[in-house]
Length: 301
Image (cartoon, rainbow, N blue to C red; front, side, top):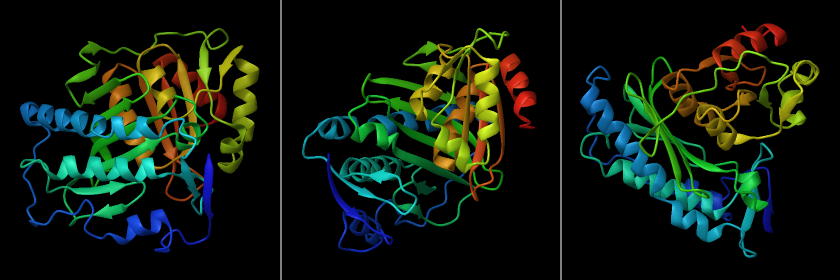
């Protein structure tokens, strides 16, 4: 891994990310068209879901071309997280695929790397080109691409997709249409015993930042099989029932919107609250019984 920059202003045009942010046309609708969309129209909702599937998988080859490359360059963003050319190329590809849709291409797009582009619309696309970039740059296959469609006013997603480039698996859901992985129905775990359940938690530093170190220790004390799976790969394991529950603090909108839809449509429980960190949320999801028990244990209403 080759690190290029450590800087306080990643809008500097001298950096890769600065160049990317400076291209104001990236992901912007040029027509000014604001599409009509009714999420109760299940046929239209299915088309939006299918577009999200296509968009999330669009950059897979480009992402994998950078994966485990000795020439992979990284920059460090002000929040301390890494970003690579793969993140930027992937977001460009996703935005282009969404914008090419005659039906849904007029929605605004909020992406982790390029921010918000497009006029204010009742619905908007949410994009995380590589969720788990820290794993990606270390050569770990536990990263993925996230695309969601949310109602802007309520911040409630109606479509959610997680694509896992390393395995080629795509998890997709839309409100009222169920959750599937490449056509296979998804169901969360029905585990009820926290002591014997498999529960996933990210790094302790994430809990500390969110003021939840006590929660981290309480879960370890109550559960014998805590695993350290992270990012959307961990979310995918919960959605598919391999992991019984997950607690993930201080998530950004692009980290969690797809998961909300996928977990709910897979029959799971999903609880969110505003995090101590501005603009972020804390998440519990998984088996409904375990979500309720963990929420009570750690005081997450």
